[in-house]
Length: 270
Image 1: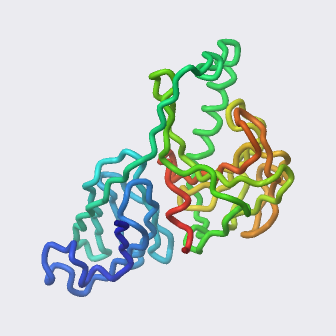
Image 2 (image 1 turned 90 degrees about the vertical axis):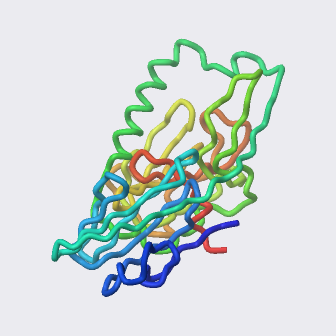
């Protein structure tokens, strides 16, 4: 069962007492479940800690945080108001079950990449990690996203394959099957952080949406934008392809909060 939290915490059942939250307005919007991005708002001028990590807050008091695929379920927010008073909000997230496929008889070349590409893979990883640390003051993430491509959902967040008894990395995106050349749209407004060919993900585009949140669009056929360019929600930024290590054309859409890998599907309005 999905757990939604979109309310003023004055009356929310997770409170330790009713009186504790008098005259305090804290709004959280999202699903309390592994892989979720939570968007929140507190009185302007407050400080917010997610567990021990201080969060970036804009002038409107907005902030975001998220937990990954296998994160622990108990967390807390600490809100320190401008007058110095402090409120602690306990958060109980829900665990998820993921699709795990066991496949035997797979040729070794499909299980482990050849040694000669190891350095390239390591360089790719460093580049992606660096741009995902971007923390800008953009506020696009507080709007509802556009689905970046039209097509059948062919892969979901959290799924994992075990080749010949060896677990592979889980899948951290939403796969949308579409023909080569189909348009890929920007999910939100943002600025291009990376646009290049990577070993695993092929032609790859990473867009900053603000507050540490970025989209990664992978396995592209063509990229229409350049690093540093500002894009608008719904703007065509690329074309669906089959580049990188894939078996067919599709878009792999991923969302990160800094280095935390989150589930794009949880943000889509049903």
